Amino acid sequence: MKKTWGVILIIAGLAMLILGSVTYTKKEKVIDAGPIEISADKQKTLNWPPYFGGVLTVAGIVLLVTARGKD
Image 1 (cartoon, rainbow, N blue to C red):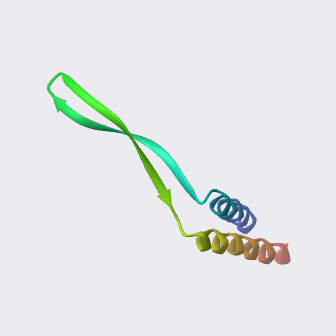
Image 2 (image 1 turned 135 degrees about the vertical axis):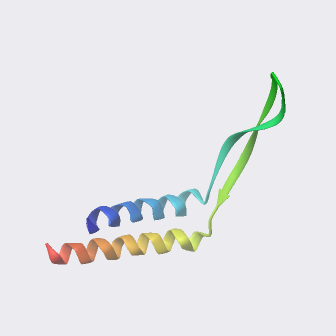
């Protein structure tokens, strides 16, 4: 189980370091008046600090190393 979480943390940490931020599109209702509905696509950006990706990567490596010693 530790190996699985270690790999997941390493992949997530490296993705956060490489990408830096993620932009996605969200559909929001602008007008909802009876049978008439108007929606708009709005872009949102998810930012995280770069050190957080490094912390996740290191935590994943630690989990892998400690799991390997117990096998």
